[in-house]
Amino acid sequence: MNAAGIFSANGGRKRLAAALVVALLAIAPALAINFPALTGRVVDQANIIQPDTRVAIEQKLADLEAKSGIQLVVATVNSLEGQEVEPYANELFRKWALGEKQKNNGVLLLVAPNERRVRIEVGYGLEGTLTDALSKVIISNAMAPRFKAGNFSEGTSRGVDDIITVLTTDASEWQKRPSLRLDYQQPVDPANWILLAALFGFFILFIATARLSAAGRPGELDSVGGIVRVLHPSIADLPLVVFQYRAECACQFGLEPRRLLRR
Image (cartoon, rainbow, N blue to C red; front, top):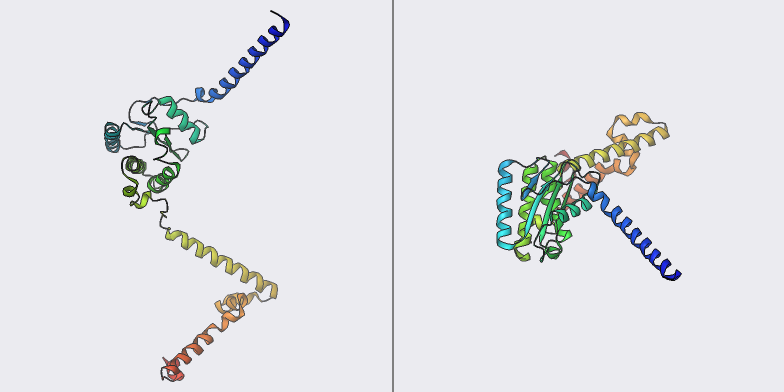
């Protein structure tokens, strides 16, 4: 073999070795993760699903697979072992080889309660039906509110119900359900409005205190009228303006302003 052939062979071996190193580095994190074993349609490692709810979910998943061939598995884990939920769910999905090989129609619902993460991993064959946008809606509307209340069983069950609905019914049917509409807005918690009002009141009081202190009149804070005059002098005249308006209206209806004032 000539020198050129030797160098070419050596270069090929080096490239192959480099490729093997890159491949090993890429799969090393996945090899180090202690994934739970696939023991059934519900793998509740975190032990957050009530026994009766688990039985009901398993029956729904079995019916789904029998009717459509879609393999939907629910998994809860104690830890994501330092990974983000998306790569963890993807690796677990591949390790379990969910769905039919030819159709790639598997679905994984992953819940990591300790990290407060949820992920719906979908096989390529179902990505056009159970889209990322719909998965986020299901998690946000059906699951997250119940998880926040500590009801993991109901939240998981509702998530499974919505996933099955999307996979097995026509879009015109499941879009009628508020929890699955992309434009669905959750009702605002009244406590949020109370908090905003309290913050606004504190802000107003802070400004009034600063202005009165700068003007050397801190004593005016003893009355609401003093605070109002500091914030906006014209507001202090509001009662007079209201009376004048009511007097004008009274004249239009044939009443005397003084009689209205006495009322």
